[in-house]
Image (cartoon, rainbow, N blue to C red; front, side):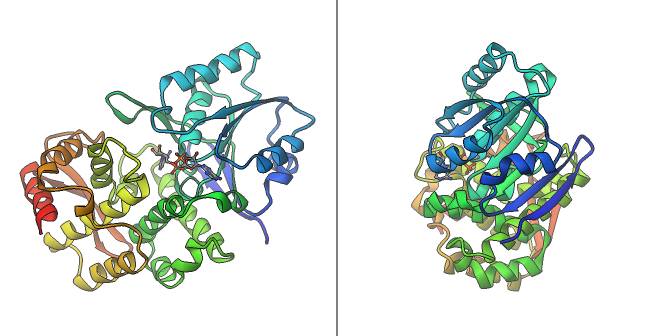
Length: 368
Ligand SMILES: NC(=O)c1ccc[n+]([C@@H]2O[C@H](COP(=O)([O-])OP(=O)(O)OC[C@H]3O[C@@H](n4cnc5c(N)ncnc54)[C@H](O)[C@@H]3O)[C@@H](O)[C@H]2O)c1
């Protein structure tokens, strides 16, 4: 299987995303070809990544001074303490900016490692090797890094682009079905906000994609990264257009937060529920046409991507869900900004809704 290369060209950095199989065993060569030079590196590895792949990577770096840090990825550990721990290693081993921090893990490991790299001596070289489907199709593209605080998710962070991203499909084989669906949620979102043809492809091939079959999974990862690339190249710092990537997410974050980020509902499942809510709201507001609405809902239902919202919440949760939607960091006022869909491939970003209107909508969702 060939390696696909996608070049990202943001104001702050140009870099490549490589997509393919068995890339890890060619890591040294890949760095050379992409002009990434360093003498010393710290590799932060999600402790659930199969050890065989980690050994392949380490073997490949035998001419470098290499330090390994195994990281237990969880939203709880996506915190300042983990950053302090990483910085302590970098400082005690006398890393310079010309050395390199490499993350091997999902979105949590990438966000934490990327943030540490961004603040170490005002910017250490950073290579991201995403190992979950979600991180390969979404979080590794675009340079958002950060940690959680007791005030909420991802509230402390930076925009910091990596020098290189390597999406090795081999990592995905050890993921659970739920984790694969989590990544698929973001793939689906990308198709809905940007590319009807891609949505039709997903509609037809979802089962092969969820089974990680080539070339379906490769195309899904590539097209997803390509859509996100086009958005972040135009608006790296989320001043306007980049907000379309939040389609479904204002609802999703509120659902996750209302359940206290319980394992009962993971991020991707919340995103699917959030997409459904945004679509239902789009239809109530007469923004989307019924045919497109039905086609998307039928895809979600027939692919069994999530359970019904009422399996997680009841009418009494309305106030809590709404309060988290108001707190969302993308909202500036008491009015709530929602990204809605006009048709498949066509989002709208500038709609603000009164909180009472949303309260009524959520309540109805949880009762009907
Ligand atoms: N920076 C961004 O633009 C951006 C975008 C979307 C999401 N995110 C963040 O990403 C995080 C979610 O990412 P995620 O879904 O990858 O979660 P994650 O990093 O928690 O990984 C999910 C689970 O899979 C395990 N895992 C990772 N790789 C594995 C492998 N190859 N085999 C088996 N298990 C493996 C992890 O240990 C973890 O238990 C959230 O914190 C979210 O805020 C960031």
